[in-house]
Amino acid sequence: MIDRLTDWFGKNRRELPFRGLGDPYAILVSETMAQQTRMSALVPYYNRFIERFPDVGALAEASETDVLALWAGLGYYSRARALHRTAKAVAEAYGGSLPPDPAALRSLPGIGDYTAGAVASIAFNLPTPAVDGNVRRVYARLFARDGGDAAGWVRSLMDKAPPTVVTESLMELGALVCTPSSPKCGSCPVASFCEAFSAGRVDEFPKKRAKPEKRVEERMICIVTDHNNRVLLRRRTERLLHGMWEFPTEEQLTLDGFTVVRDSKPLRSAKHVFTHIVWLMKGYRAKAERASPPENYLWRRDFADLPLPSAMRAWKETVEVIWGNEQNG
Image (cartoon, rainbow, N blue to C red; front, side, top):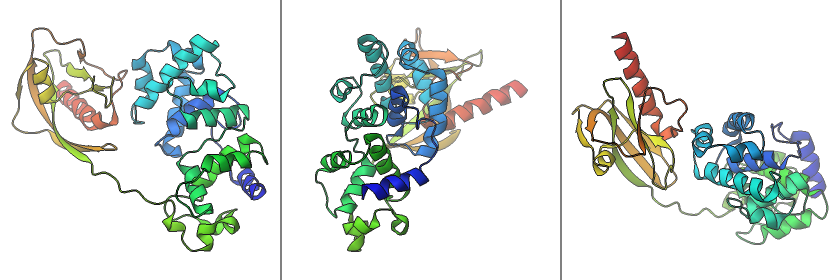
């Protein structure tokens, strides 16, 4: 089976900017970004990130704000903060070079079994399985089972082929052929070994888990400007989107001691869906007064350098329209 898989990979592998470099840092960045993100969306972010932070040292010396600003729009911002912490730890403990040891990699902040396995196997060619959703899906269908020792199976393949090739082949197979829905079994290089395919039960594996119902939150976004046409922004301290900047809600402004008066007519509505939460937002022009704003607030005429999450995209566009209208008016 492994010969068919690796032969297929050699002919069908995608050309990706971090492939074939043998650079542990490039693998770390790409694999961190790849979690919960499609490859087509990842590549432009990866290229910008590497251009700005070409090595561990550059990332370690950067501010969290700069890191989040380049990550803005990619989502799951805890990944960026974890990557930043990892870079700092590597710079301090290993002189800026990721250690070629799976246990040492796993000891770093922000690196779990999967990321350690990916870096160890792809960058250092060590027989350390990297089991992600793609690999679990391939394993579940090949053996028509839910659960089981996917890592042990991957390790057995690494006895027969270079770990680098095994890891990337399995990831590519899951991404391009053995997809979650509408898998391309007719073009699968290992279909003859697949028990689920032979039994006509591919759609049954892996077993689908019931998704929890998303919590819905209604948010009143306040677009507050001053006499200099600056807009009020708030740096989030909550766990969700921690460290990102937002146009504050009426509720948060009030909690932070502002006196808020908003227009009765909304500017627009917007919706943003997170993993477990849905934000239903309405935006208003508002006045907000406080003798001395808290340190996590600031007035800005330009916020291009600040990390604004994609949830704020509608309000960023709204502010730009307001600025344009007032400038032309």
